[in-house]
Image (cartoon, rainbow, N blue to C red; front, top):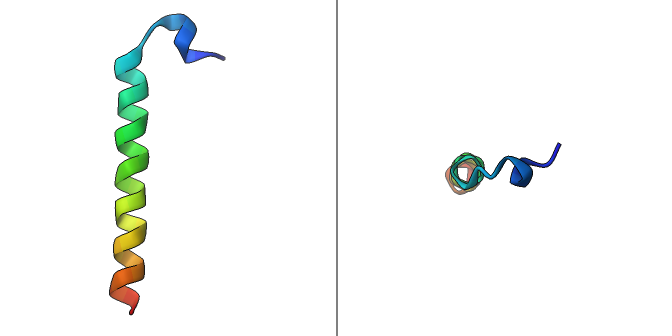
Length: 34
């Protein structure tokens, strides 16, 4: 299922922000573990 066919750049941006939030939490956990 290609989301680009639906033409929803805001949906892609939502996924990007969600992934970015996960990355931030992941990095924070690593830094706090030290």
